[in-house]
Image (cartoon, rainbow, N blue to C red; front, side, top):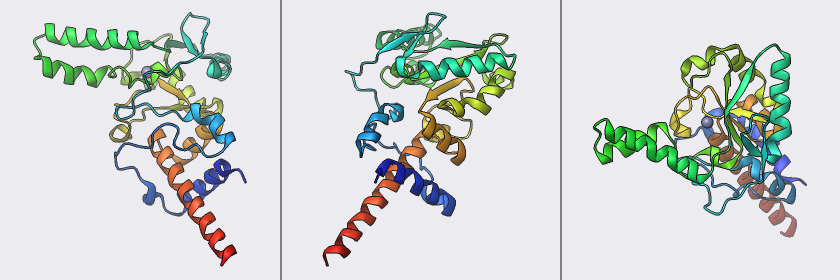
Length: 249
Ligand SMILES: [Zn+2]
């Protein structure tokens, strides 16, 4: 049996039964890769890579990049779904724009250090500047942009990264349809305590079509989904062990 698929089915059943039992408590979720159980699942592991303030990207992480028409780069494996989504968005009469995609570790470090320097120049102490910078720019190693799986999408007519972005027709379309292409809005307004990142109605993350649909249907964020998946798999293994015990007794 395909354990991953079975776990997904069990997860759906669990969610229907009692949503409260797997509600996240803000604790760090599963490490990337720990949900690996079968070759099929292993193939999809890259889609479930978890990078957040508590889960740093491995220092030796490498990614094969592919260039978008505007010169920015993404993980080559998400290229087709991303361009299909943007193309369909344009067909709906809209003008989405990729304003940020893959960032190297060096770029992330530069952005982070620049933010600290600006805060220091504005009078912040070193400690306060570091603390404040972390609220706005991800600490190097903890940004999803370093994975090549995340993009910031904005409306051509409104390119500011602030809350008003959610009111653009482009974001409304993307929020409604992104899951059809394997993407999720990664930092929803009501999940900041779990994701560690404030509401970002422009940051989309590729997780694959199976997971994006499960996340869309469940209302979980990625951290919560991975925790629920891990728990569902534990249940399967427990049930399997019980079956085995019955068979030999
Ligand atoms: Zn972003």
